Image (tube, rainbow, N blue to C red; front, side):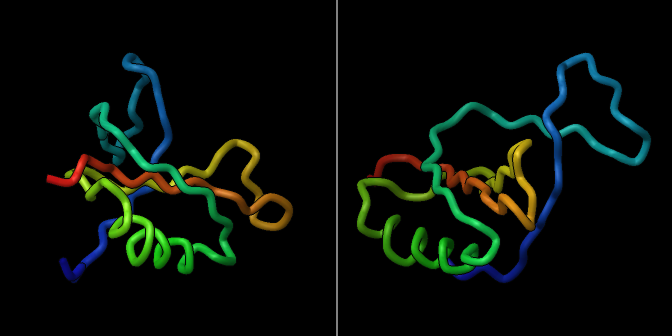
Length: 94
């Protein structure tokens, strides 16, 4: 499938009762299975190429409906610790 557009949203996890500031919206992620990959900022493009060009086609999975997520942990620092995790929603190949 050719991707013709990209919707990028930054977010932060909050509790169910957390007040949502004006101008922001709530987005609830459904529980599902994800393949998780680690990358850094310098090789992020290469990581996506490997995930969708090699790993996914050769695996027993296909991409499932739902958002692809990038998680920047609390220890993320672009200078000293530029590591992030990529979450790809997956389901078994039919």
